Image 1 (cartoon, helix red, strand yellow):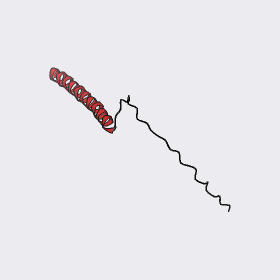
Image 2: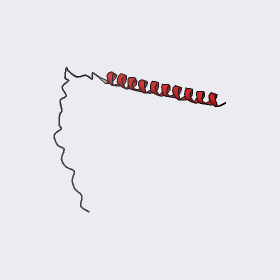
Image 3: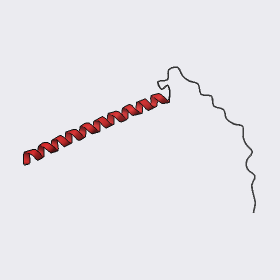
Image 4: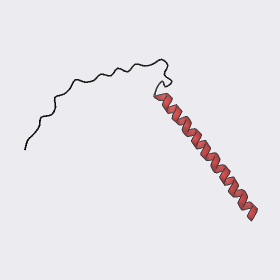
Amino acid sequence: MIQTQPAPPTKPMVVKIIDSPNSDLKGLSDVLIGSLGLTGIMVLGALLAALVFGSVLFWIRSRSA
């Protein structure tokens, strides 16, 4: 069985990240607050839709009885 030697390690690539002063996103806190805001809007929309749907069903049922 022929065994091959692993490739010799290459020089590491260094990437320098420069913060831009015009960036709208300033950190993880902004991402979390934004996602919680979107989730809150979706939850409120779902609750409102459920309330309207339940009210319509209650009204239809009360009219037929």
